[in-house]
Image (cartoon, rainbow, N blue to C red; front, side, top):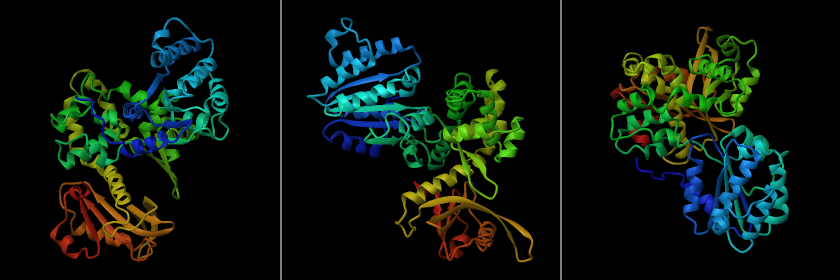
Length: 460
């Protein structure tokens, strides 16, 4: 497939603005694997007419890393010296870069920085020293980038880190939203684009695996349920165990949450461990899980691709290896895609409401979450209330939303059930928004006075 750069207009604009500032500039860019960090920086470098050094750290020894970086630096700045000179320390190499940046703007990009910092722990202090003494008066545009999110937070951005306070820009790269994801999928219907968003979590590398010259179904089978498919067990392990010491335990925890075991005690029981507090903290810190605060706190997966894999692919591994994964898809997955999309559709609705805040008579919201509570009904009996979307500005509830990702219209029974639940919400006349893939029945269209009725096509 043709390698085309899409999206990231905001990030490029921010980087360009910093680039235009005179003098030394340091940028810290981080985000999970496959999200497009390197491609973003390569595009940024391509768009600017100056010399640049790009070095990607790997898991090698200190001597080899110094040699590899030296070669990258000399190839960019003094190719005639390659193979003729060497540097005995990173500090000397950094000083050489600084001397070249005294009279011209240079870009120095270190990719996968955590691998360098873990192998050479002193590198942080060396960079601190050279920034403060050699680089600060020059014209270097310095970028460090990393996929190990917890490391970047704790060892680079934290107040206790040697480089704290040196960066002019800290940029966290997030997955694409559903509209940005759609830019990769021009030949698909809006429903197919939405399903692709759910299957890829908006991660650039994952979206690129879907060839829109082929049907969505063929792509799912090819990439998830076939030998050699991109979303293999090894790929999943790479995503999950990237920062973990006990891969089997973390895999089991992810599997537990993906299959509906969301509370601490339920997860511990599922994985057969007495206490999962620490690994849950690690997974939250790595942003694979999100802890939702409620009367009984629970966990959700932040990556819908991982959730799909553990719910609908994991058990098919033997069939896939026998080159018969398609049979599992047709028998056990195809009819459940819309069920899987339920939570993703809620996420899409949140993105829609945030991007349209203050427009089309939608309120300005500072937070949108789901809502669960147990109340007493008219007969003083306990009643469980679950709301898909609760939109607030501060502590004031301004919006209540319902989302249905099914092909049939949102009908009278569903509308009446929603209105009954809203009676128990502690809000004064909130705006009611209903998002529906299949549109709305005549009854709802005629009687949902004051409600905003939003179809999937409206969202695109």
